[in-house]
Amino acid sequence: MYLEAKETARLYQLLSDKLGNDTTEAIFKYIDNKTERSVEASIQTLATKEDLAKAKYDLSKEIGNSVKWMFIFWVGQFGATAAVIMLLLKK
Image 1: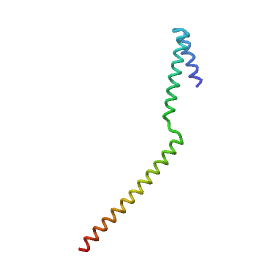
Image 2: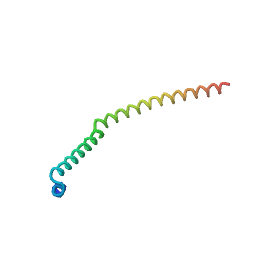
Image 3: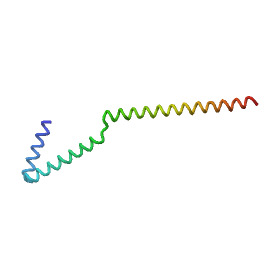
Image 4: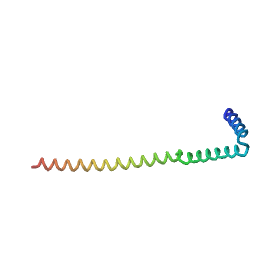
């Protein structure tokens, strides 16, 4: 962190010598604002622990519903197949 501050101060000084204080100040403010907006945008898209917990709960609920309906489907299929076999055996 110290090296970054030192490098930033050196860059500020070099730009101030070439471009003047006002222009250098405007450049640094622009970069700070751009960086801040970028970080804020990234934060908005990150998932929190609560988001992940809710997604996990919803996913487990969906899987549970799917398993329930699959079970009902397969029991129905087994019953239909057993009925057809019983009809064929009676003939």
